Image (tube, rainbow, N blue to C red; front, side, top):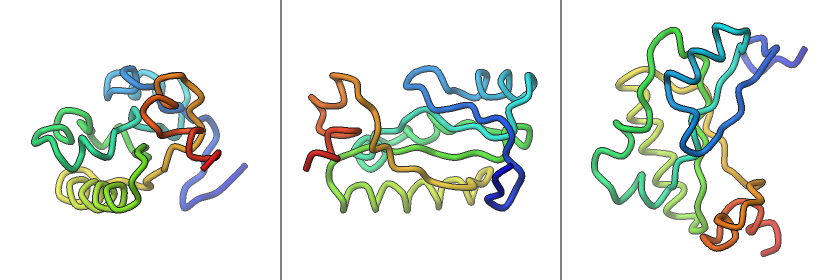
Length: 120
């Protein structure tokens, strides 16, 4: 068993457009001890008012929670991570922020994020 401040047995991985609060809580009820938010786009976190509120709904039953971000500009990603930390500390907490470097979808390559960044 791996420990990162809490025991982790089963993990609900991030899925774009799927890993909302209802899905995460359902996964937890079926045994997931850790869940990820859906992948958040760092440029949207920084540039779209209300994006975090829409995407990061959570509650105590939804902890621990890892928020995943993607992007291709280090400054934007750092600002997004800071905004996520601030938002979550005010509302419900976040246990970790994950930077997506593994998404192999064509959409990720076209958007220049995910596994595309490993080639650069």
